[in-house]
Structure formats: C-alpha cells, structure tokens
Image 1 (tube, helix red, strand yellow):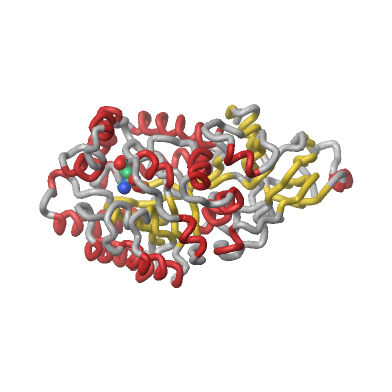
Image 2 (image 1 turned 120 degrees about the vertical axis):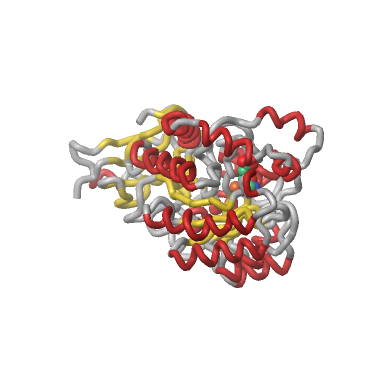
Length: 421
Ligand code: NIG
Ligand code: FE
C-alpha cells in the first residue's frame, strides 16, 4: 500500500468515528479526541489513524510528511444548507430591514427572493459561475470541504436548470464537493401571484420530472411558510418529489409555526431546516421519525430573531446539524465558523456538540455519512487543521478564521489560510 501523506504531530485529533446514525443527545457531546496523533492517507482516503511516531513504518520515498505542529485537527467541515448559486446581492434592502420591515413583507412587495430571481435570470452562466466560485473559495478557506447547494432563484425551468448546471460544473472543477437540491418551490413567481395552483402544476408536472430526468438534483426542498407555500401545498409538492425519487428537505417553521416540522416527520424528510418557530409537537415528531433538525443560527442572527432552540432539541434527543444557509437575503455570509460560534453563544450548545453538528450529523443531513464527516479508515481524507489548541478555543475566539491548512481527499487545498489548489 502506497502512503501518499502523513499528517503527524497532531495536538488534538477529533475523529467523530463510529457514527452509522446521526448522533443524538449525549452522543453529540461525547467525542473521541486523540492526543499526539497522526493520520495516514492513501489514494485520497484515510488509511490509518495512530499516535506518536507509529507512522514511521508507513513512510517511503513517495510519502509527504506534514507536521501539524501540535494543532487541532477535525474532519473537513460540511455546510449542509446553502443557496450558493445566485445573481446579485441585496444590500439595497438592508436599511429597510434595519428599520424593522419584516423579511416576508419585503418578499410580498416583490423584493427579497423575487429580487434575486431577477438578478439570477439576468446573469450569464459565467457570471453565476465566477460569483459562486469566489464564495466556494471562501467557504473552503473557512475549512468547509462539502457543500449542499439549492436552486430556487429561477422559478422557471430554464433558470433553475442554469443554476443547477453551474453547480455541477463547479462540483467538477472545484475541490469542494457539492450536493444538489432542487428548490423550485422557493417562492411563487411574480407572474403567478394569487395563482399558486397554476405554478405548482408546472412545478410538479414539468419542472421536477425534467430536473430528475437530467440528473441535476438529488434532493427536493420547499419553502413551507405562511405567505409562501402552505403545509398542504408543501405536502403535495414533496409527495410528488418522493414519487419521482428525490430525497426530501424542507424549510420548515422559520417564522410562523404552521406545522412544517410535523410535515417533515410525516413525509420522512432527511432534514427539516430552520425550525425557529417549530412547535413542541413538531419537534417530538421529527425526533420519532429520525429527521435531522438542521439549524441555521446565522440566519436568526441576521434577521435579528431568536434562534431555534438547539439546546432543547439535543436534550430531547433530536439529531441536530448546523449550517450557514448562505444566501443573499437572510444570511449573506460564507463563514461557517461564525455560525458554529453562534451555536455556542445563542443556542447554548457545547463546542463538542457544535462540531458534531457540522461534521458527522451534517454528513447524515446530505446522505453522505458513508464517505465523509469523520476521520476513519476508508473515508475521504477531508481534513481541517485549525490554528487553535482545542475546540473550546475555536468557539470562544469568535469572528476570525482559525484555519491553518485544509486537505481535500488528501490534497493540500488551503495553506496558511489561503486556497492553493
Ligand atoms: O433559507 N427562507 C427561505 N429561503 C432562504 C432565504 C433566501 C433569500 O432570502 O434569498 C432561507 O433563509
Ligand atoms: Fe435556506
């Protein structure tokens, strides 16, 4: 066996190993942390994890040996909910927002998501590609090695496909792996205002089958919210998506508790995302049905709203993941480390629980736990080296980028905080 890479002298290695199911309750906090560790990599995969100079037997003239200098090492971070591909930005709505105009009101007045729909329609393929690449580089520089991305700024077939094709090209060319979600049910397009039924018919009968046929998305998602898609409409759309073979996600109970979490449980969604306003019944339902609660603390922070109750969910044994929701409206930031710090500061999660939520539980959230989310033999060698002595420090010293180096499938892609691929 040819060993391509050894990362030696790891001060603390958090492996997240042994999680065939999403971690819940106390498991989220009880981590395996190996001191004075090394990782051996062969053909982009983890070959062995050990301690001290046990790696010496594996080294030959082809092996690159990298010194972690006693730093903290974790699995590459996973951002399991983003709206990566979009045209334009929405700083023009910023002062409205600061003056207290609600997010949904801005949308109902033709701004918000609908404004980004216009910018995305007007952007060329290359413009969308270059803008998203810049964001993806930033995410990678923060230690993120896999990203879920959603369409939803076309609301008609051509632009939805353009968004997804941009994402597929990026997936091919960029070191970060992308997982694709179709979110044609992100808003009712302006020309169908007051005529939801007509748009939903096109969505279900034309758009979803085409996206499936082209193999452009693995998941289907709906923005289930008062004034956007009702529970009944969301149930119809997601049931049809299930019949077509999509795995399911849902933007649920972000603003008003309308029963999105309950619906996620009924349909067997892989994740229910947001949940700031979810009812206790909804949380019990998703817990019973193993739906992952994907909490987005950056969005609550940016909308100046109370975060979803991560502490309560973990105490109820709901599997929790955290992600950025990076988008031009409610979370214009690619910084998953800041989201993690909010997980501690606003959700009262422990640093260990937060790391679980952005590694192995996030991997389950995008159905990739067989290949990423932990450092164990046979998984992808996606590795983050932080310029920090321990996890507590990572969460406590907030608002900066702690990354030192990142490896993606055994290849050095970030060095000294900057992309080098
Ligand atoms: O997850 N809430 C719905 N969709 C996104 C925001 C999209 C936007 O405002 O452009 C979210 O927060
Ligand atoms: Fe979102």
